[in-house]
Length: 453
Length: 107
Image (cartoon, rainbow over all chains, first blue to last red; front, side, top):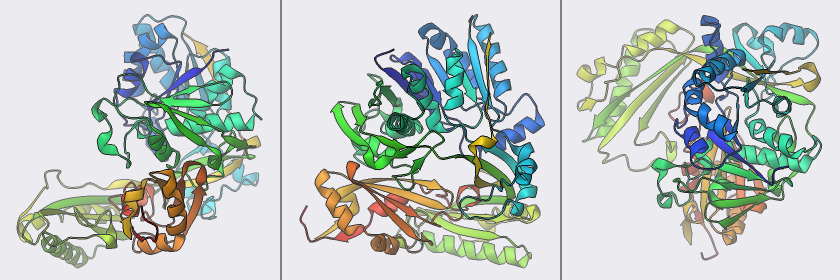
């Protein structure tokens, strides 16, 4: 058994810093790297791509990335785990195999985890009495059944561990929990049992710290952010994990950013509800038992984590089509910047009403004045400039499109000193809404397939 | 004395549907009891008037000197349905930290 394993965070979301995963495999020792590409509604985008082309539906950024790092990870025996397989993990695997062949890499084993996509099985589940009600509002699925675009079960670490045990060097999954991507290597390397709840919880906490990349190593830090060195060259976090579940959060020597108890605490608190009940497929972690200690520069020890048995359910992430939206901005300059922007908004709304256009919602904000603070905003009198932002949402695509045509005219037919329309006429975009539900674990089984090049 | 929450704490906010979560962390261990005493659900609800339209929940994490707040119905519907510039509540942390507290203790 290794004394410890180093798991690097490579990407926190699709669109994250492109150089980060490359730096992680080149700037210091790493055993595993996790790459997270799936936000809540990403699957709907990937499903759409797959419908247009059956060879797509995965995070395309993965291919140029693997093209770059395959020699590094093959040479250093770094294993990579990612949920970027999205709606088409098998096609993703095939594309990576092609890249590997180009580089002359032999004996590469890629594991694929799928079976999370249950879109075609919804009716069968409903018939079996699995209701898939909205777990937050209690609404019945029938409300949105006709507009469902995607439905994916969140698997946990188990199928990833299975793939690693079958010798996979790279594991590509569909929808799995972000924390599972980090937890799986620990279970594989240290032989933790599935009911070692405290260790499973510790691994889950490590996963939560790593899952947003640089946001744990000095990015988006409201502590002493001005003193964070070299954010341009930020090093993403690395969890150095020990067999007993303790771990140290750190980053490669010589990289920018900061790993401190303060940066780690901010990430611990990110996107959590009741801290006693951080629920995942693999355990319930109690965040009120986590202890965090600075032990050296850019080394933070995390210990004492306790966990409880996992629930009998898995979360299902579903998305549905809910109309169209568009937004546009115009910049107004001093004097009376805010008053001009307010007047422009009034004129715009009067013109939209005169056209008989109806929207489910129309929203006005003044960026530079009140879009963040709302009623708490101060100092609107002597603004140098302010940005009028108007957004609309509705089911009538024509109305949304028509709204887009009312912005440019304001430049020549509204209050003075206005600019910032270089972006052009805003186009309607699809509103994809989110429907979270629960499904019994017994009702779904992941498929794990490990294939050698 | 009047202080800003920013003086004794830092914060991170995130989203879950139409709910914003704001974690507030004491800058020094001795400030945590002040957070527990003064950063009440009522004070937070009052501060977020016009931004948060649902209930506020508060959770304590004494192990790391922090509180976690859930602000329901604070994101204009949340996700891609929301028309807010800050649809994901990433600056709710700033709104929280701007709060003024009238405290009896000296810091």
